[in-house]
Image (tube, rainbow, N blue to C red):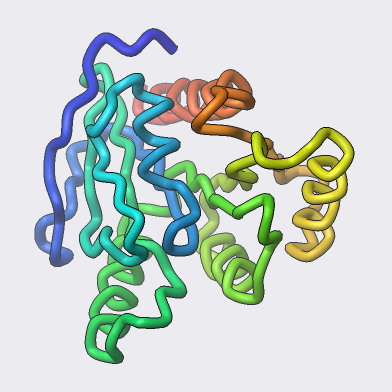
Length: 201
């Protein structure tokens, strides 16, 4: 997809702020510090559009970015930030639950898993939870530039096995640093946008 425009639109802190204007949505989910913001910036070709921080847990809202005026990229708060207080974790969970219930059935969900770490128990729980809403889901293995070809293959097979993925669920190895895998991820996004258009026609 050629990116003509990409702009930050809204940080939603409550359900009443969620955008429901009929445009297709692509939601990005993953553990804290998995590389969501870096991947979003690389996908959109905009440095600093999504805020990057070395401190986990910085994304505390549902952040909307409008791409080419026709599709929203939605950055969800990262899960699994151990240092967050109980009240913060409960607030994040409530916000994510509300977004998922309202939008995921018709959204594409991109679940990010750190290729160096592999799929954790939290990733397994997230995959099961997100799959339950009936939307389309693709798994992305991030930071693959840090692994050699052989280790990368082992990591991808491990992620697929741990998450117990069926053949219908893609696992795309990507690197926000090198750009590897972005073409394949964009292909999935384009198919979702085209499918959404047909449903609305």
